[in-house]
Image (cartoon, rainbow, N blue to C red; front, side, top):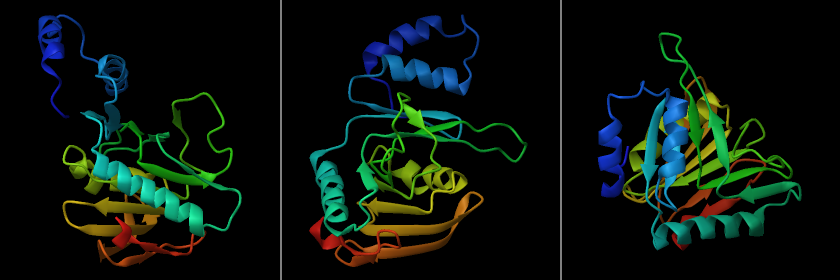
Length: 205
């Protein structure tokens, strides 16, 4: 988990050992409630992760992704969402519950998939998720989120790995992994599968 800002450390230390240990979901709710404004709090494989807002370059890539999808996507019922929370779950090798809550940088799903008042939604309608790495979140994007999105059965995971200068396309989820992984240099085009079915120009990033 990313370090908490100092003003939260002292009061948390004062209550350490005086209250029962929190379940992962309870700890997630606590950090979501008290975390600094603008920070993203996620629950991945039973662990809470909090990170500061992304930088401007990150926002530009997400905006470019949305723009290209809007320009090329032909299905009028598909929508591009940002800031939508998804419920992820799974089991450990011992059969224990592994709760998850993720907020992908971009989600593609049919119109109306999230027309409720929940903060975190069933991922069943999701056709594609995309993540753009930041230094504080990159390790999760390359590990826990691959497994979480595969377990959720999300058909396509697009990872824009700024540190590795790569776009990585994961398709064919089986269990907690994807059958296919294709890597492209950030400058090449990435062939997105149906229902998108167009060449994503990563040179525009």
